[in-house]
Structure formats: structure tokens, C-alpha cells
Length: 224
Image (cartoon, rainbow, N blue to C red; front, side, top):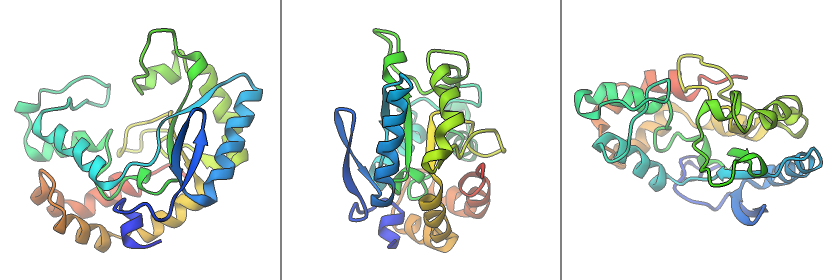
């Protein structure tokens, strides 16, 4: 993949794939496995839907900047809101990285990673929050248990299955193992630094100063 593809600046590496009632941009080597996973889930009684698939650099930067500026809530590790105005830039960055990727470093740039849920298990009138309790004890629990047993059969895994001190556990986030591993290996620290130097984000100076730590703790630190 090209540097622009790896960092979410272009979509030339992706194809339209209809999942449910919507089309999503998906890596072509992942598309068939994703559709087979959805089909298997349907046979098991779950309506697999994608809450979030591909996100480009600009979208990820908007999420990042809104949190840094206080326009969006920053959550702690227990999904509780933090008081943005009491945090230093360094504290904000560390808290944001627990739940939101650094622009240019999101696995969602590759078309290999998806936040999924079973729409038929979502209570009527409720909005999916993508919070751990929904999957561990709430309405998505049965679906999550099914995924734990069957996900690997279709080439997928949970990159954030447990807390390794980086990204908080995300039981909704699945990744295509083979394809994402190749992308991850190509996303080098020098490449990411180059992209961030020419694409200003809020807190850029602190991010660049701590980028090696961020790279090791929040980008490459995943469940294998």
C-alpha cells in the first residue's frame, strides 16, 4: 500500500461492499470474508451491522480536534467524562488515545477494521453507544459470545480484546488479521511522523515529541 493509503488520505485501495442496507469502503482482500461473517451471523440469528468502517484522515482529525478543543467529551477508562479544561495537552492526548486513534494511525484507514453490532439485539428506541457494558453484560452480550467463538474462522480477531495499557478494550472492534498485519508493518514511525508534520492537528507539538511512545503504546500494542 502507498503511504497515502496507509494513512487514510486516499481511498484508491478500497472497494464498495454492501453490508446490510449500506455500502462501505472495504479492502478488496477483506470484502468476501466480511460478507461470509455476516452470513454466518445471520444463520446463528444475529443481524450483523457495521457501526463504523473506513474513516479517512480528515474524519479522524475532526474527531481528534473536537476532543482536544472541548467540543466533544473525553472519556476516562471507565467511559466517564473528564473535565477537559482541567487537563494539560499531554493529559488530553493520553486520555483521547485510550478511545480514539491518532489521525494517520487509525486501523480504520485500511478498510480492514470494523466496529460491529447485532442490530436485532439493540432495544427499540435505543442508540448504540459503543461502550463495553453493551457487549460484556448488555444487549450485545450474546452476539459478542458468538463472535468470540466464530470470528477467527473468517480471518478476523479482536485487536483490543484486553487492556494492555494502550487502547482500552473494545469488544465491538474486529480486524482482518492477515491484511491488517501487512498494513501495520508498513505504517512505520518515520512515515507517521512525516504525515503529522505536514498535517497540523491540535496538540501537534506534544504528539510529535511523544510520538515514539505513542507508536509503541497505542498503535502497535494490540492483542495478537
